[in-house]
Length: 99
Image 1 (cartoon, helix red, strand yellow):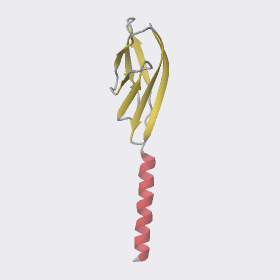
Image 2: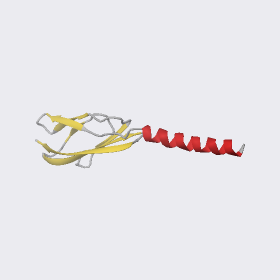
Image 3: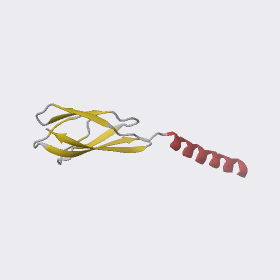
Image 4: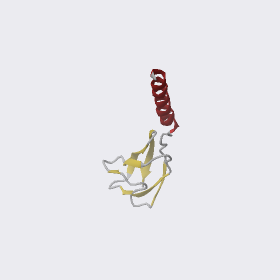
Protein backbone atom coordinates (compact mmCIF):
# COMPACT_ATOMS: atom_id res chain seq x y z
CA UNK A 1 0.00 0.00 0.00
CA UNK A 2 2.88 2.33 0.83
CA UNK A 3 4.42 1.78 -2.62
CA UNK A 4 1.11 2.54 -4.34
CA UNK A 5 0.79 5.87 -2.49
CA UNK A 6 4.37 6.74 -3.37
CA UNK A 7 3.78 5.87 -7.03
CA UNK A 8 0.61 7.98 -7.11
CA UNK A 9 2.43 10.92 -5.56
CA UNK A 10 5.25 10.68 -8.11
CA UNK A 11 2.74 10.38 -10.98
CA UNK A 12 0.80 13.42 -9.72
CA UNK A 13 3.95 15.54 -9.46
CA UNK A 14 5.10 14.43 -12.91
CA UNK A 15 1.74 15.23 -14.51
CA UNK A 16 1.69 18.65 -12.84
CA UNK A 17 5.15 19.51 -14.13
CA UNK A 18 4.37 18.09 -17.57
CA UNK A 19 1.12 20.04 -17.92
CA UNK A 20 2.85 23.27 -16.87
CA UNK A 21 5.57 22.78 -19.47
CA UNK A 22 2.98 22.32 -22.23
CA UNK A 23 1.54 25.81 -21.77
CA UNK A 24 3.04 28.25 -24.23
CA UNK A 25 4.09 31.67 -23.07
CA UNK A 26 2.43 34.63 -24.74
CA UNK A 27 4.34 36.36 -27.51
CA UNK A 28 3.62 40.08 -27.74
CA UNK A 29 3.77 41.92 -31.06
CA UNK A 30 1.96 44.76 -32.79
CA UNK A 31 1.86 46.98 -35.84
CA UNK A 32 0.48 50.50 -36.14
CA UNK A 33 -0.73 53.09 -38.60
CA UNK A 34 -1.50 56.75 -38.10
CA UNK A 35 -3.68 59.35 -39.78
CA UNK A 36 -1.40 62.38 -39.55
CA UNK A 37 -3.34 64.14 -36.79
CA UNK A 38 -1.78 62.42 -33.79
CA UNK A 39 -4.14 59.45 -33.83
CA UNK A 40 -2.46 56.05 -33.94
CA UNK A 41 -4.25 52.76 -34.67
CA UNK A 42 -2.56 49.79 -33.02
CA UNK A 43 -3.09 46.26 -34.37
CA UNK A 44 -2.31 43.51 -31.91
CA UNK A 45 -0.56 40.54 -33.57
CA UNK A 46 0.29 38.70 -30.32
CA UNK A 47 -0.17 34.96 -29.84
CA UNK A 48 -1.09 32.70 -26.90
CA UNK A 49 -2.39 35.65 -24.88
CA UNK A 50 -5.63 36.24 -23.00
CA UNK A 51 -5.14 39.84 -21.84
CA UNK A 52 -3.15 42.88 -22.87
CA UNK A 53 -1.61 45.93 -21.24
CA UNK A 54 -0.52 48.87 -23.38
CA UNK A 55 1.67 51.77 -22.29
CA UNK A 56 1.64 54.48 -24.96
CA UNK A 57 4.70 56.32 -23.67
CA UNK A 58 2.84 59.52 -22.82
CA UNK A 59 1.38 58.47 -19.46
CA UNK A 60 -1.67 56.80 -21.03
CA UNK A 61 -2.47 53.08 -20.88
CA UNK A 62 -5.07 50.65 -22.19
CA UNK A 63 -6.17 47.04 -21.76
CA UNK A 64 -7.96 46.87 -25.13
CA UNK A 65 -6.88 44.23 -27.61
CA UNK A 66 -6.17 46.65 -30.49
CA UNK A 67 -6.62 50.21 -29.24
CA UNK A 68 -6.63 53.59 -30.92
CA UNK A 69 -4.74 56.35 -29.14
CA UNK A 70 -4.53 60.07 -29.83
CA UNK A 71 -1.34 61.82 -28.77
CA UNK A 72 -1.60 65.47 -27.68
CA UNK A 73 1.86 66.33 -29.00
CA UNK A 74 3.84 65.24 -32.02
CA UNK A 75 7.09 63.47 -31.25
CA UNK A 76 8.69 60.11 -30.58
CA UNK A 77 7.15 57.76 -28.03
CA UNK A 78 8.12 54.35 -26.69
CA UNK A 79 5.09 52.05 -26.82
CA UNK A 80 5.12 48.88 -24.72
CA UNK A 81 2.65 46.01 -25.12
CA UNK A 82 2.60 43.26 -22.50
CA UNK A 83 0.61 40.16 -23.49
CA UNK A 84 -0.36 37.81 -20.66
CA UNK A 85 -1.08 34.11 -21.17
CA UNK A 86 -1.43 30.96 -19.08
CA UNK A 87 2.17 29.94 -19.83
CA UNK A 88 3.69 33.35 -19.07
CA UNK A 89 3.81 36.81 -20.56
CA UNK A 90 5.67 38.52 -23.36
CA UNK A 91 6.57 42.13 -24.05
CA UNK A 92 7.04 44.08 -27.27
CA UNK A 93 8.52 47.57 -27.34
CA UNK A 94 8.58 49.93 -30.32
CA UNK A 95 9.64 53.53 -30.71
CA UNK A 96 7.08 55.36 -32.83
CA UNK A 97 7.22 58.79 -34.39
CA UNK A 98 3.86 60.54 -34.18
CA UNK A 99 3.39 63.04 -36.99
